[in-house]
Length: 94
Image (cartoon, rainbow, N blue to C red; front, side, top):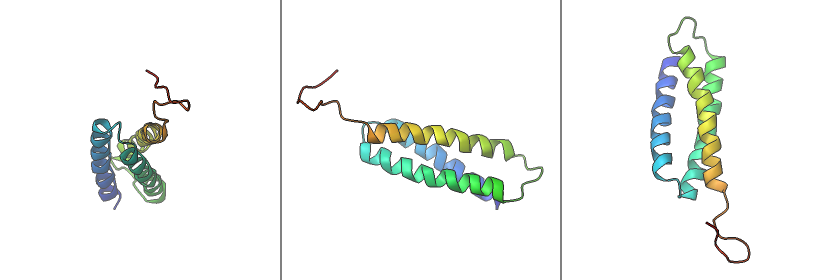
């Protein structure tokens, strides 16, 4: 079960990063992916610390992927919830 969850989360991680990179200006997509990523992070840490994985070769990769996923989620939240380049007085900023 540990290996299966790892590979599901790894595939999600790759799809997530690729779509995130090509849709940086799509705030709705960034918000959606960020919240899905939060769920993936919770599941990842729950599986990592809640299941037996003695001597498994994926231990380090699983934990690393979970921590990198936190950074990706933070970036997605930034791009999803940032203000538009229009200021409150109607002038645009560069």
